[in-house]
Image (cartoon, rainbow over all chains, first blue to last red; front, top):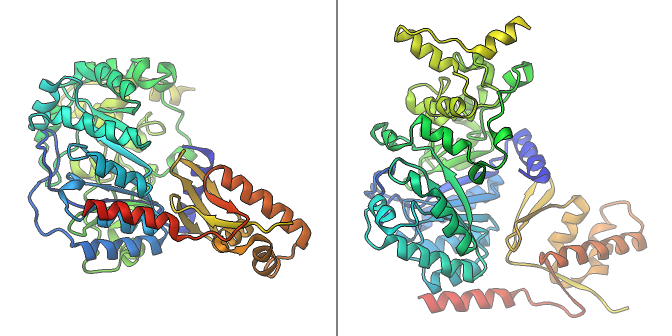
Amino acid sequence: MSGLLAELSQRALDLGVPMSVQLDVTYRCNERCVHCYLDHDDHGEMTTAEICGVLDQLAEAGVFFLTLSGGEVLMRMDFFQILEHARKLLFDVKIKTNAFMIREKEADRMRKLGVEAVQVSIYSHRPEVHDAITKLPGSLKRSIAGIRFLQSRGLKVTIANVLMSQNLGDYAGVKALARELGAHFTIDPTITPKMDGDRSIVGLGIGGADLKDVFRNPELVGDVEEFCAPPVRVDEDVLDELPCSAGHTACYISPYGDVYPCVQFPLPSGNVRKQKFLDIWQNSEQLNEVRSIRARDLPVCSGCGHVGSCTRCPGLAFMEGNMRGPSTQDCEKSFARTGMVTANMIRKASLAGLGLVQISSVAGRLS
Amino acid sequence: MSQLYVLRSEEIAARMMAGEMMIMSPRDSTLFSLNKVGTVIWNAADGQMPLDEIVQQKVCARFEIDLTEAFKDAESFVRELAEHGLLALSDQPIEAAQQSVQANAADEALR
């Protein structure tokens, strides 16, 4: 994060301003990705007028960064009306799309409307792998064509590569493809459980040994020594830290108007069809509970040596059953990075009758 | 001395926070934060009011700043923003509608 952005984020936090919002305009999608956490049926999406009304409220509340996502945003026939309204309100707009339906006209329109960046999910550089994940024949070819249209208009494109066992061997190919297309490249080894709590898709993610290899690949993480550095020493400042921006300076709104702390934190906190956004943001009991939590309030993680450097996602923890609990996926990442077991792993091993010890915590107490 | 007219770009993203303007240039993803004086000039940059009048009527009327000094600073400020594509500058009044006309034409083509 740049110095100025960090400063503005801190100011937003101090003032209670929701600086970033992700608005999913639809859950409908032309792809059926094997790992997707959404139900793609339309259960009563907000109308164009409702969404534009919500955007008016978000602008009034001080939202600056707006991510329009789905589902596939272009499944909505009124998407450009929504985008045009968002830009009239001077949001900094990012779009997440599979780019399948982006041709010259759509790319031109996004450019003219001043979209800041577009993120496209690409799972493999090989059609047989990518299309098997999206379950849409020809999708890689169309998505690449869409990226080329966006790039040729000068739009910034990021290729997001979700890592699963099905496409693990292909990240180098996707990165080379991104380079060839002039796009940025990111990887994400996190598979989010379904919104309804079904965790079956989490098993599609890569295992610990593969995660370790990914985290030790300088092509992917940059400075391996820094990325895989031992956890920072736990002190009072660390224990006073906030888990992330969810509910603090950011939140998520579903196509049905439900407000959650984050797309990955489906804690129902209000609905913009029933209440003003600002009323939900300022007074929701659920958001206020999320805001009250500091690292020291986490019963397992506060005693873990990783607490100061773990990427623990409170939303994933919530989906495991307790927003104050550990997020097992992040424990696995901490372990893969550092080789040091987590307090949660020790707890689970103990429950299973095994004896694990967190070495650095013991060393910390002796010093 | 010819007059200088300033017009906010329609391509930027902007939001006010605690009386100060945050601006993002989508061209190069550069983020700017204007102080209160800069925000006053920004808000008045409608392409119709010349910069010297903006400084006199909007800035000096509100802040205790010497007019000559304020104009010098304001000119350097708007030229810097113009370099990043955040403002258009001209010695003639600028019509804000020009960019909208282009966007509307593109809209029509899609309908």
